[in-house]
Amino acid sequence: MYGYWISNTRQFSSRTVWSNWLGVARSLWCPNNLTRRFYRRMERAVVRCVPCESKLTISFILDGSQKHMLRDQTEELGKALARISNSVVKGQGKARKSKKNKTEPTEVVEPVVRLYYNGDFVAEDALNSDAWQDGAVLHVGDSKYTVERNPPSFTVAELPRSLLAGFPVCPTLVIEFGELKHCRFKWYRESALSAGSEAREDCWEEAGSERVFTPSNSDIGLKLKMKCIPGDGAKCGAAKELMTVGAVEAGPGTCTFDNRHMYTSKVTHDSTVRVVSYNILADVYAQTELSKTVLYPYCAPYALELDYRQSLIKKELVGYNADIICLQEVDKGVFTDSLSPALDAFDMDGVFRIKEKQHEGLATYFRRSKFKLLSQHDIMLSEALMSDPLHGELLDKISANPTLKEKVVQRSTTLQVTVLQAVKDPSRKLCVANSHLYWHPKGGHVRLVQMAVALRHLRRVTSEAHPGVPLLFAGDFNSTPSSGVFQLLSRGAVAESHEDWMSNGPEELCALALACPFQLTSACGEPAYTNYVGGFHGCLDYVFVEPRAQQVEQVIPLPSHQEVTTHQALPSVAHPSDHIALVCDLRWE
Image 1 (cartoon, rainbow, N blue to C red):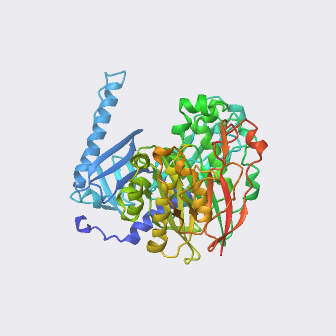
Image 2 (cartoon, rainbow, N blue to C red; image 1 turned 120 degrees about the horizontal axis):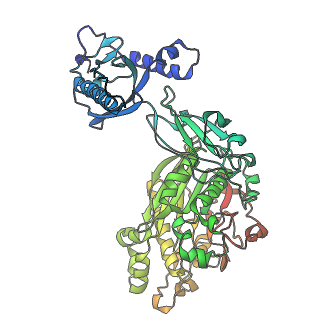
Image 3 (cartoon, rainbow, N blue to C red; image 1 turned 135 degrees about the vertical axis):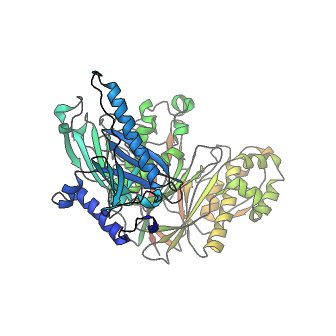
């Protein structure tokens, strides 16, 4: 690439480029640096040039107007500079035509546009991809611009619409050429005297400097503003400023999870793993007319809105300080735009598996400082049953009843399987399974078939893909402690005489004797209920573990019956779902 420079151009090395870039970075951060005083006189010309793309972009401000040019990377520099010059001429022509007094002609002067690097003129036959380097200086007439190539920048930066006092405000941020852990943040609140008036620069008071900000009751009625500067640990990009659409509103008061957070105020030690399993109620279900008028008529309409419920869910999950979180009924947009940005700020990474034919699915999060992702082995249960030889014998038996087979095959139920490895002790691995079984009250026989497929698949993962790795199986199994599914998991077998095989009458009967290949125990026992709605309450959610590898150290108490029924049932203004999260601490053996 250096052959394009003219003969008297000094060769430049990566050290030179690095040194120049550090000068730019210092100019932004060091108030008393001479470099800052020099570069303050120059605007920025930001160049985005990615090898895998055919185009590069050049962005700068000229005469108060933002210029954004898209050029071929293989184009000669001279053509790009000529395009800039032509743009200036056009801008001057428009400015002359817009003047009220047109009696005095104004001469349009074509500016000299050149690019310099280390004080030397860059040859115009250099390719754009080679010419626009960090620290180069673009001259446009009398204006000078320092070139920043691929500086850290936010491609997505948004604040949530719902702001509640006492609940964390987590910005959605996607960064390019940088890392969020190297970004800098400043939060501001409106001054009380200027609330509601047109925002001015002097009406903001600094409120925080962390990535996540939790407004207090004193912030009610005030808008918030966040300034964030992207970085990569060595250099920084242009600051992004965001302001909330609305003001902070009063929170709901005491929530059902507030007392539970007293038991989870700190992250566990390396010898312990805190696990959460939670059906968070998908928005695609919460917003149906059936939900509003039949299932949850007792719930205030605003408390069913996604933004409101997400504020509660994020505060609840963050307050558990969990190491592993298994969620069910997660809307795809909620995973991408809400939960992942929020939990990322608290050291959590997540994986998502959507249900086929649905807009919601399963999410498993894990603490980065404790675990790393080894592999994923997700399946759709019906698809695996039909196509994987592992389930051939089971499929043959189910096929004897075409009605039952059709019902099983139509289900889009998914099993999410994530294998994790402890960061500090690589010998500790864990197979985390997460599922949400068929929901119908008369579907006990379908759930038994689904669980049989799931267990066979998990046995293969823990014996072939990762031999000896212990299992943690969590989720909403839609099965009470008297069900065949619970008996299969907790006792190791279910007989063909179990009543669940007849759960939808004799026409779908296909009685089978099933065995569980694992020795499991319900870590949270058999609570009176984990689902509490107007017409039903019962225990449907579980966290199963292998005692050979992990022992239960602590089960976080569920909300009291009084807390659950304060607003009649769930969900409510104080609880975001119709289910209750299970939380337990497991100790490695």
